[in-house]
Image (cartoon, rainbow, N blue to C red):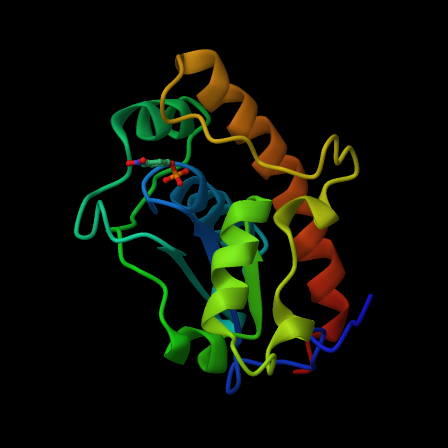
Length: 171
Ligand code: 4NP
């Protein structure tokens, strides 16, 4: 696996991540909120630019799903996102693009027609120490338990991701 996405970064040149799902209302806003929280806890907020986006446009402009928000809030985490659709400029701009499942991965690869950005597109669960089937499951049509499971998976994955990036901070 290419590790080109692990570039040195600093406050003057922050590391840019975008979490990606289908609608940008459940999974990727949760990942974004968790990662922001962990970065703030570590006092590293000036070293990162953190965003989320969806490969589909159905929910553009919406806040995170109410069940995603309720679940995150129970864990002391706020979800600030307003849904937007991922576009080609994002592939150029961000250092790391993190699809939640293989369908999102495929959609991103379709934007990357010339295959320029492969090394910075990584499945979110590549960072999960318990990766299961490698997918962050879509909780949209299910009950609260599914949202709690998504939170647990993303909390674990974000923890590892931050630990992997930290050594690349240069002051
Ligand atoms: P997300 O969940 O991709 O985690 O935001 C979904 C949200 C909406 C839909 C599907 C998944 N939808 O079909 O509208």
